[in-house]
Image (cartoon, chains in turn cyan, red):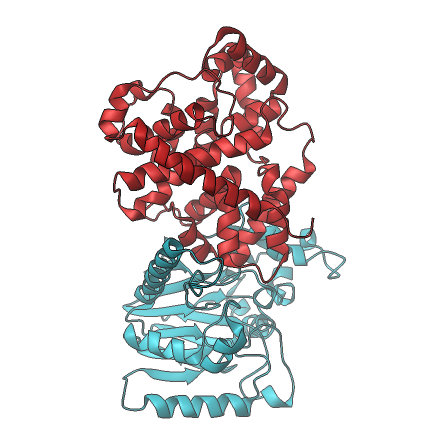
Length: 308
Length: 291
């Protein structure tokens, strides 16, 4: 298999350990990607799940020599970086880490945002005391050749801070992440009686939102595996979660179906959602789309590996 | 380093710290802190401030660097960047103003400069509508007009003694301001404006408008339509004395510009009432409710 994706953290917002989340897991975002026969490692996000991935790496990879790898952060909200100080390879000499990610304002540097967690007032070890060599690089919308036939494309998504979706292409297979992400909407579309109604803005806003949504769908069109934000149900989203930066199950399924994705993984589970509730939502969703699409849909689950 | 190089160095270091206009500070703070403020409120307050407008455009165009099209629509920028990001940017730009010297706008009057900038933006857009330009391009005319004199802000704030001299020289010798700026500081606001617009990565058309709006005869490029429109709007603002940006004795607009744009002075009368209405609306909007 060309690409193997293992989920070490699937939860949104905050870790939720406890009896109601044992099956799908309570750790926040962290994905382990392995490419080809050489088992090349790339990590997406450093949520609390990265601590357990670190244990796996110590057992498996360090035998082969010092660790050299790349971490791609989708964004710098805390649930996606909080595990970084617990990623043990950063304390091991000769580890070489390249950390990539977007920042919203150019005055902020990625190393201060991510590495800034390692200071005495938050944590007993200071950034300057780390044994590893860590290189931080701000990413924008771009294409990168990662060598060995691995190609990366990034795409801006819609969230309260700058977020990148990642697309990895390897040996003819395509793997994408689209989280944290809310569909673009025309936020200028208010009722005509509203004092802030502006016809021109409503028209321009509708056009901009449609075009941006199309660009996101084009980004993952035809993907073999897509990990998409599905924090809310459509009902929750419409009720009071608009503007929070997350998608509904229904949006992700429709969007993936339109873009002819082969396998969609529902990800970034709402922290309040129990295993039982997640499964009930999943079953009802599967029932709704049965015979209407060739799309395979799964729930992201800690410790599970999906291969393409 | 000669005097001109020193002046340019002072201005360059100021650009990154350039605050939004004081007239908008309170409203920006109100909107940024109010979770119920609408995207339309945000859109409006940014549209009324050349510095803020420039910064949002810079952010969207540098973040999306590599895309084929320069983004000039603020509505689109807010949708793409998100309300939260834009609010933070607006607030930080206004805070820069709060921290800087209270002696800002010594030579030029803040309210007059603001009215002039807004007038030229609105008038450029109205002229473009009159000339049946594509609705998608109207925002570019507005933003170009709003920002055309942006180069005066660093000159006025960082070289205020020299700027007072430049302004009194225009009165004494009945000269256009850009000439007296050159005499007292060796640079004019067009050159400084281009530095800012190029630093903000706002694209070639905007740079051309800012740099050539007093030198349209010498303009060699492809953005003639927007440049001439802004030059005409600037002439209108000065002739009808809407706001004041220091140019009491501007050069007249060549008849050829009217011919090329296919507008007449009568069109300006129509523009005048609409512009005044827009400025009054803006004034009311910027007054903070709880003050």
